[in-house]
Image (cartoon, rainbow, N blue to C red; front, side, top):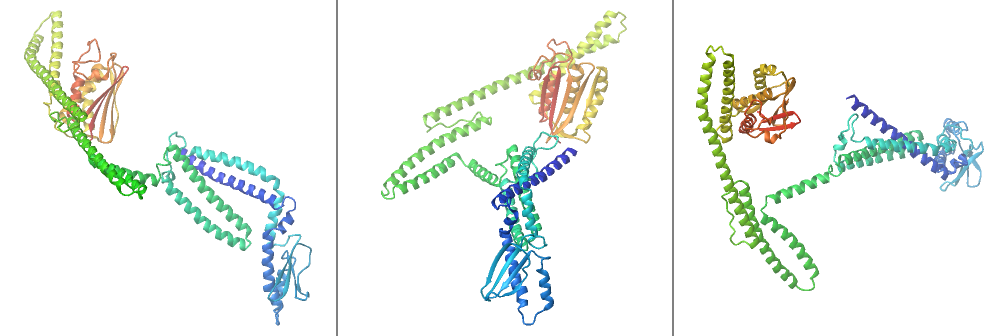
Length: 622
């Protein structure tokens, strides 16, 4: 969280700095060009007096003098107080402007001419016949409308040599900050992953429209404000408004540039646009509609569109040659269409036959009557494949049934004498036999007969699991309770085999869809496999994780024997991890667990990496 806030702060600072540096560059370059063009570098005073701003201020003062001071002065009954106010207002202390008004005979009527001037102009009042001569003082010191622009000209003359270095430095800073913002676009602090921001998720064309609207709105507002401030000679406020307007537009431009850079990195520059989204939706809709149409209708639509285009071309080029070319073209097109429709019907029959065979209907036969030679041959091949696959499946099913029956029958036949052997060995074990050798033999018989009994039971269970005899009674089961029960059952065995079980605590209850009896048998096989084949002094990891609508249970342990076998081979029946077959087990445990898992609509996955053995059971979420 701190890294994210720090990165956001850095970007905000970069936006502020690049705006300031860009403004400095723009002002420096503009001022440098204006200084050269208006001769401020040689004579700032004369450049000011010849400027349009000076002429405009002077003209406005002249208009005010004539319509105010002079008109009041010419009244029969003068307002002496108002005249005194006018005189004070146009005095040398209060203004840099002075004037002289003469009548049509050249006589001075009213004047404030008291000083040398740097600018002079004459205005003739045509209606009244008076002439107003206006002047601007050489030394601009009074605080009126002339003072601020004059100081700007003087300041520009003083800093003219610094403008090029300032422009160069600000340009370098602007470029470096621009590169930083473009490189950091879509990147989060402390992470290499790309992640779009809120602005990057907005469709690009919509973003362009919004930004263009903001710029147009800003232009309308600022242009009115700038005009009003300029007309009132509020130059300080005017500079602030212009700077703010430049900063607003420039920040919008930088945000847009950074968003485009992020979209290029995320490869969504064109994909995240309304035009692309709408166009893709339209094409998907059309493709979806076409996908539901039969092949014949698709062909007819295509031919119809092409034919219409060709017909328009022919009509245009044969407008002066009669209707004969169009009629001939139409008849030929009808023949081609009929032939293509016949071919399409043949393809539809073959397509339907292939779909039936792919669905397992090997009894289906394609009617190849009235087909073209090539299509008829293809239909015969599909019919032969269907017959061959049907025969192969029958043979395989027969073989599997025979093997299952053989295993079941032999297992049952073995079970009866095996029970007798176990009972007699138990009777011998209860006898008071003092001979140690005989007792040793009895222990061997007990152990091997128990192992043979387990193998027989596994054989019967494997046969039932693979033959489809076992039916699953599916229900919603609490996996946490099952795992607790299984770990409790095997805690003593784990201790006996010096194995430390590590079961992840998944906290809340997790439910799976399974058969309670079969899931217990599967868990028993998996835990028994860990106890039998794990290397002593190691840990066995049992993890549970949720994957959308599936629950994944993984068992991981380090094998005591070298696993010089693939996971696929280990899943087969009668196959064990140790090639020497010296360890306990029948090689049926994993095969039985896999079959029972599939009966419960689950899957089993095995992975082997060196001596690390990993088995995962995946069930539907309850």
